[in-house]
Each structure stands twice: as structure tokens, then as C-alpha cells.
Length: 392
Image (tube, rainbow, N blue to C red; front, side, top):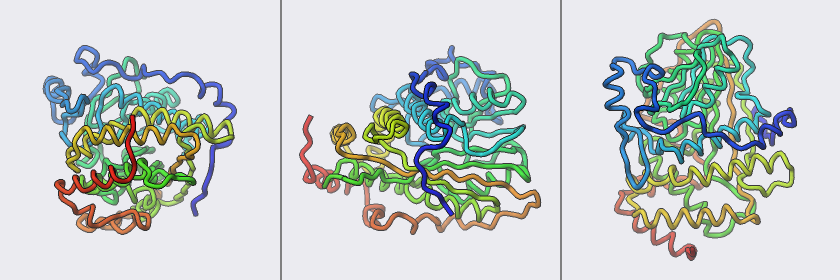
């Protein structure tokens, strides 16, 4: 049974470090001279071909996007988005009392960080466990000024066949992959396959949409969350229904000792409790920094919204987030599990029948909207404009 929590115990020992400014030193400028090609690898490709193709980034609406498996992920890979990722990493450490994960690890030997982003988690884990091999994978190269010798970064698509053999890793970490995965049961089955018997896994996912106990009528945030969910469904990699189904998918894959924790994350400094206020502060900063990146490609490419409308919506959402009278928050699910020492094969999965489809919060999925054509975006835009007046 899942537990609902606020912040973790042991928080006081982390409070001083948590209040310090966030460093963005884990990634440098996205230029060829800043990336050591010996630090990244890509199965089946030479370093020269990686340098020419992977770093030939795509640019759209003033933001930079990955070129490997172009279009497979909707968010940018530029400095602004990387700063948001580092802020969210800081939030997770605050919630976990300073720890990098919730799983109890003794002497891990082979650790995998899926969707490593800036590489900050993998780098810190490699520091914590210097005898372990830590691998971070992502669609974009990690631009790092420094990393431990036991940490490597690889460019790969986690939904493709994995390079390393089955039963290889003894700890696999997957955090905030909503919007990245088209077939979650297949993804978790693959994690099961490549986790060694007796190995451990940890999943962390967000429940969408954001909520407020005193949410205003015709809320811009509610509009932003709903359209983001619609766009992600049309994109084929849903936001909604992921966290809520994690436990089922993990159990179905064959994992045992499954534990679920639900943590309420404040967005903003409205909590009276100083611990929660600090968490909410950094969550708000990360939301401000990352909100545009989470919106531009999905809303323009998938929903067909003009950039002017998207920017108006983002301004309206920002105004609501800055209003201290509105107490925004969301739920974070933490799922930990182990692969049994006596292994059985994962249950077969039928990808043509997505299991998350009927698992959205009641009233949140709009079947007509999910199946709409991009030309219908004008109707949603008019509905938004009629809902509330947008001011500068």
C-alpha cells in the first residue's frame, strides 16, 4: 500500500547545503571544443560520426533540440532547460533528505541512470560509490566540465535494444520519464531483463495535472496542464496515467518487494513549514525555468498553436504561480523494487493496447480532444481566450 508523505526525516542535516545556490557547473557550453568525445559513446558509430551528427543540433523558436532520433523527445537540450533539470534534481534531494535515491544500496557495482539529462545524478552517484561503474544514457551528449573516472555517458534511445547484456546492472534508476516513453510496460520489462537477479530498481514519476486546494475558476494552469496532457497523448508519449500505473507495471514485469511512496510537492513558498517552503521555492524556480521548454514543441508542432498564443498562456500561468494566495502542488510517486534471485520471464505485453489509456484521473481525459486534428487548435485557443482576460 502506498504512503502519502510530506518531506523526509533527516532533512535538518541537509538544510544548510540545500539552501546554497545551485551550481550549473555540471554542464558547459554546447560547443564541440567543450565536449570530450572520449567521455561519450554510441554503439556502432565512430567518434567522428557522433561529432558530426549528434552535435548538429536543431533550433526552433529560439530553443535548441537534440538531433539524434530527431523529434523523439519534445523538450530542448539547451542551457535554460538544463538549469531547470538541475533545479528539479535539487528538489528531489531536498525531498529525500539529501539522499540521491530512496533505495538502500550497500556496494553497488553497475549502476544505470536512464535519461541522465545534465548527468548530475550519475556524477554524484559515481562520487558516492567510487568502486561502481555508473552509466548515464540520454538522447543528447552530456556537456560536463568534470566527472569521476568511474562515470561514463552514452548516447542512446532507451526504447531501442540495449547495448549491454541481460542481467547486467545491479541498480537501475529511472526518474521523470513521463513524456519520453511510448510503451511503459515494454520499457519496464526491458529494465527487468537487464537488471541482475537480486538487483534493485527505482522509479520516480509525477502525477499530472498540478493541483490547488483553492484553484481559481478558469485557471490558466489548469488549461496548460490539460492541453499538455492532450498534446502528449497525440505525440504518443503520455504525461498522465504514468505514475498511477507504475506499481502495476513493475509488479507485472516480475519485480518483488515493491514499495510505493506518494509525496506532496508544493509549488511556491506558500507552505508555513520551513522545510516545505524551501522545497516549494526550488520547485517554483524550476517550473519557471523549464515551463517554456515543456510547452513550445508540443503545443506548436502537435496542437498547432501559434507562438504568440503559447507565450500568452505561459505569461498567464506565471502570474498564477506568483500569486501567493493560490497553493499549487502535485504528487510525486516513488516506486522501489527488486528483481527476484530466482528469475521468471516477464509477462507478455501487447503494445497495441496501451494499458494507461483508461487509467487517467476521472474527468481529465477528453477522448474527443485526444483524437482531434491540429486544425481544431483554433477552437481551444478561443476557449482559452474566453475563459479569462490575459494581461501583461
